Length: 179
Image (cartoon, rainbow, N blue to C red):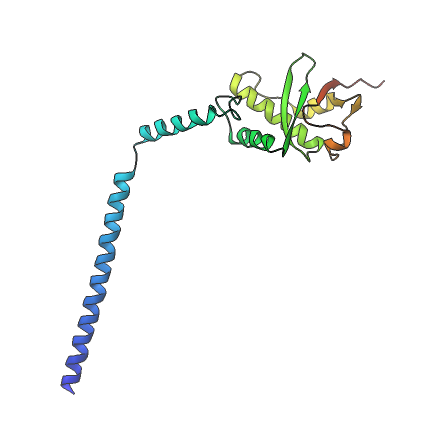
């Protein structure tokens, strides 16, 4: 009986030893991986340099070359969608003669166009400085969007239903006061 206990103790000791050895080996591997990760980590300045070089290459691409320097992901995605025919450019003419190239998806509604105009103006203001706040409620209460003499009044109606296609012009027109 004593021999059986001794053998069981030896087996337990061997099992503990094997378990500890495996755990120690795993810890050593983790430490080595962490050291390798530390060696691979770049200082912030080097990372920025690499990023700026990559960005410069992207901006030189013929598809993306007409994007502004402070480009947003949304603008890049819009340009790609245009290239693949998934979006269209609607040229929105303001009273002062400025033409805003607004990119919307092919199935856009009037409301989508209004939101895109708002986003375009917000980005323009951020880049140029200028007016800090525009009351869009006031803008849409005071102005119509007009295409070929037809007011775009129904926000839920698709631009296609009005006959608006890629590169068509839509005009901001001041609403007339009712007496």
